[in-house]
Structure formats: structure tokens, C-alpha cells
Image (cartoon, rainbow, N blue to C red):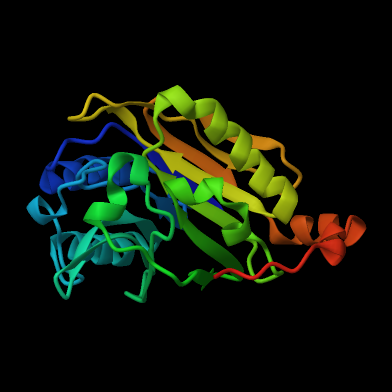
Length: 253
């Protein structure tokens, strides 16, 4: 399967402008892409003022994603600010070409920035089956908590969409590689670029990492990153080195 990671600056609290930017990037993609991934809060930037920008699950961005998925015959996913029952969520939304929708609410909220005061955390993992592959959805800070991402032989690929600051980019690179190695799975990770309203700087380094920890692609430049993943090769590797058989059993509470 060919995946496109869209790495870009984000315009602060301007969903229409961000959708327009990503639509132009999608129009420039290779025709054989089957999955497109966008950064964390790709319509607004990483904001702690959800009431100013929150959308519903029937809002403009969901409608836009649904249209893009159908017209381009792709699955598309990224996180955005969602309001439900007067509660705000940092929600990863995945939409299939047929309009089928999957969602994941960020489990680990970044309390150093006050995310836990502005948003309600999720408590359920989300694993999406698509074209013979199983994708485990995660958002940014989830990366620091490996128990949450433990592979119980129920997924083939970890996805992280992020607004990860440049000051800690070494952590991003190291932890992504660790998640791939320890779970013997692919890792797809898309980060944003630019400087936000709070003067936090982001330098991308979106990446795709193979099941053996090797880097398939990584870049700090704006644009589209392509990654090809091969489930049969991954399964052969795991059969040869079945480390998962000796793994500890972990309970999440």
C-alpha cells in the first residue's frame, strides 16, 4: 500500500485556509496513493481554545474529508477539534472512500500545555482495517506511553499525527523508532511545520519506519512524503524473529 504524509505549516484558527492548502497538496499527489495522513489539529493548529474553532461530526471539515475520500478514492485521516455534548475532543478522524468513518479521541493529553483542562481524554483504542492492513490510531503525546501502543498481534501499523515541537525532535525520532522495533510493525508519523500563535516552532521530520526499525523516508521540508508498506514482508520477518511470543502482558487502567 502506498501512503502519503502531508507535511505543511498550519494557519492559526483558519480551517477554511488549511483545508484549501491540503486540498491543493492532495491534487498534486501520485495517482496510486491509497491513504493520506494529515497532522494533529490540521485545521487550526494546536490550540487550547477549542470553543473558538470546534466543529461537529457533521461540520465542514468532516464533509470536506468525505468528499475528498470519495473523489480521490482514498482513505484520509488526521486530528481536529470536535465538540460533542458540550465537551471538546482532540479527535483523530479516518474516512474511507465509501464514507465509512472511524474515530479516536486522544488518550494522553499534553497537560504541560493545559490540554487536559481544555479537552476530554479518550479511553478506547481504535484499530482500523483497510485493504488488508490494520492501523492503530494515535495522536502526538501518545507516543511517550508505550503500553498504550503495545501490539497484541492486532495491528500492522502504528499511526501518529502530531504537533511535535522542534525543541524535542530527537525524542520524536527516537521514540518512533522504538515503537516500530518493539512492536515489529510499521510506523507512520506526520508532524507539522512552522511557528504557531504561541511561538512554538515545528520542524516536521515526518517519517515512515519499517518493522525492523529502518527509516523508509524522513524529511524536514514542506511537501508530500510517500511510503510503501508490505504486510507479507513484515509477517515473514516476524516469523523469523518472533520476539512477541516472549512479551509481558500489560493491563491498561
